[in-house]
Each structure stands twice: as C-alpha cells, then as structure tokens.
Length: 137
Length: 404
Image 1 (tube, each protein chain N blue to C red):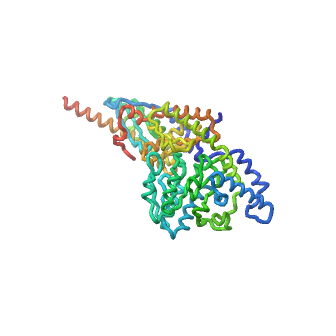
Image 2: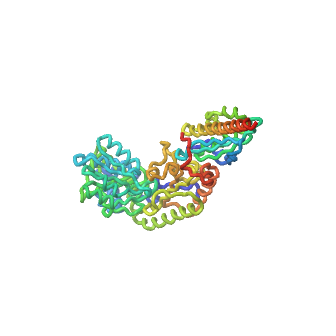
Image 3: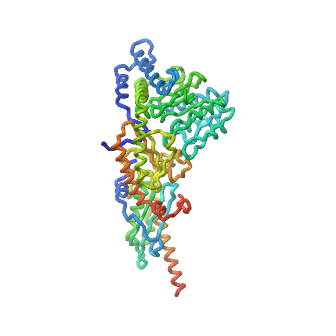
C-alpha cells in the first residue's frame, strides 16, 4: 500500500512525542485502543485553566503508520485551541488532511476518541478541583 | 550492496539464472506440445518433461512415475485432498489437518466439509508443532487422510512428519504433506518420511511461478486420486491440461540445483539467519521468537518485537522486503492465524516480522538489515505508550483497554 506524503512526513518526523505528568491537574490524558487490536493511542493536553486554551499536547502511539500520523496531526491541531474548539475536531478532518484510504479510517476514529478522552479527563479533574476548593471554603 | 533488499523468500524466490537459462529454449525454439506423439517438436518437449520429472523425483527419493505436474502447490493441495476424499469416499470421510496449515489446505478442507467430509483441525503447541498424542486421539476408523505440512510458511517449523505418517498408517490412513516450503530447502525423502502424497512448488525454490508437482505414491500403498480437472487425460489421467513445458523444465532444473547444493546452502542459510537473530536479540529487549528454533527451516526467522506494531515497523524499514503477521498488513485485517494458534496473544502477532532468507542474500545485507531493524524498533518504542508503561512496571495484561 502506498502512503500519502503527509502520512510519511508525520511518521518520519512525528510532532510532539512524549508524556506529561498524568497527575498534573491541568493535564488531561486519553488512552484509547487495545494491544490485541493492534493500536493504542495516548494523547495528552495541557490546558491553561484561566483561559481554557490547550497550551501543549503530546502523544505516544502503538499502531500502524496511519495511526501514528493521525495522533501526531491531532497534537498539532490541538495546540492553541480552546477545549471546546478541540471537541469540534472530527475524524473526517483527519482523513481528509492525511488522505487516509478506507481501511485506515479507524485510525482517525481512534484519534478523535483520544482527543475526546483527553478532554473528558481534563474536565473531570477540573470539576473535582472545583468541588474540593468549595469544600475548603 | 543494492537496495531494496529482498528477504521475503517464503513468499517467493527469484528464478535462479541457471534455471532461467535452462527454460528459455522451450519458449521459442523447442516449443512443442509434450503430448504431440507424431513429430520431433513433441518428442523434444516430452523428453524435456521426462528429464524434469526425473530431477524432481530424485530430489525427494521418489520414482519418476510418481510425479504429477501441476500449476503449483495450491493446485497440488487441492488435487491431493479433494482427489483422496473422492477416491476413498467408500472407506471413510474423515480428514485430519492442523490449524496452522496454509489456506490452500484449510480452505480446501472447508469446501470438503460442505460436501460431507468431517475435518479435524489439530491445535499446535506453543512451539508450533503438532502434539502426536492429540493426533493419535483424533484418528478414527473413518479417517482416510492426515494432511500436515512439512514446514510452516510463516514460522518455518518442521513438523515431525515421519512420526505423523507412522500414526496415520497404523490406522490405515494416507499421509499427505504440503512440502512447499521444505522441498529444496531441507532433505525431504518420501520413503524415510513415509509420505504418500506431497505438494511441491517451483517458485519457492528458485524456479518459476505457475508450476508445481504432486507426488503420488505408487507402491506400499498404491495411492490413487480422482482427477479434479477433466480433459485430455494428461499426467496418467490425474491432471489434464497441456503441460507447461518451460515451467516444468525450470522446476526440474531448480530441483537438480537444490539437490547438488543443499548441504552447503543449509549451512550458509543457518549461519546468516543465526547472525541476524543473535544481533537482534543482543541489541533489543522484549523480543520473542515465534516457533521452535530446534526444528526449523534454516532460512526462517519469525520474531515479535513487543510494543511495536508490525506495519509501522515495515514502514520504517521500507527498503527491506519482509512480511508481518500484523492485521494491518493482511487483506482480512486479522492478525496471523498461525501466530494466534501458538497462543502467544494477538498483541505479539501484531508485532511480528517474518524474515525469509534466500540463496541470493549476502552477509552484508544481513548486517544492514539487523542494524536497520534495531534502529527502527528503538525509534518506534520511543513512540510507544505500551513500551513506556512496560518500563514503568505496569502489567499490560491487567490494564482495562477500551477495545474498539
């Protein structure tokens, strides 16, 4: 199978590889997929709590080149977006940007799921922080 | 050294230049139909076919008359299984095979099941080999055929065919072996191994594609198969169709070369394969060899690089032609059923690479491949959340994954 130039570029030069501290209250972590399915994506966002803007994003992916490219692209798109804007990213946007063939659409779905899971995690954390601070007041 | 490097010799092999040279006259100059009995064009073609028949027979310790030329191993497997099922239908309808067989066996068995046969698919042990006790237990009075491959096309393990054939014979069943990967690579002897039928392919042993053979025993016992192709009654009625003379000449020449050079080639293949294996194991942790190393083709290495997905690894070593058991590289999007049958877990199947060394690989190529694979595996592990978790001491089997 031939890969698109953009998939190859992300595979050869993956953007924003790495990890944040999961316990940081400003970090949201999403981990989706399963090893026996052949792909696992971990996507993390670091949010500025004052502005709600994603200041940084990182990923690590076990999966095919298209899965790596989808998550690498997702981190690029997430940086600078607000949490709500990030939730508007659709898997079809990733499919179009990377010219993924039909058999690789699940990679983009996984990336969208990872974004949602990371933001969900961040929101839960910040709500808990809010509850705790109220309790202390 | 030239790139890309071909190291996928279980898929196919290049035609040996000596084989090609032997074939060429039969396309243009001596192009006769081997069945033409009344002129020299036919006689020349027939002589060439009979010479090739002898060359094939000699490689496996058979008699010339026991070789039936076909279009390849898939056809040979179909002819053996369907032909025996039909010929011996009055004796029984039970066939025993193994879960790790090639699709040409498994899908043929599925077809036979639809037509009323009973098929037992023996599991294999974690080393890839059939458990002889399980085979013994599966045999019934209705068992007419046991079909177990000689060497596996993915993991290269060599089944204990001599013991298997003994068990089959004790119960009066015939023994067929898909010897596609073994013939020309390791010594195959139809007498010593007790083989009644054996499938052979030319293009796995430096011959051309589109030609193969089925060995059909003529004595002790005399084996018969019902033809699956109707027509002019070629090949003693077992396989009609004008003979592929240049292809058959190529198969014969490939067999003659294999016979003459096998003992040296086995040593060279094992040396290169072991060098590749040792370098990979020395530089990388969490690497697993699939299938026993003890009973194995000398040119096969099947390795899982844990926490790295196979297709992404192939992408990184794109100037090296190998194959993977990863689902992403298969048409069905399922990971290798052979590796799954070993019970290693789907995750290791996704992470597997099959190296198939061949006659034309050099030591320089092996060194290059080892270095490149190590480099890419390390790079991909830096990217892998699983490797990170493993390094943190997390047991990945205990993690609640969100399967999709």
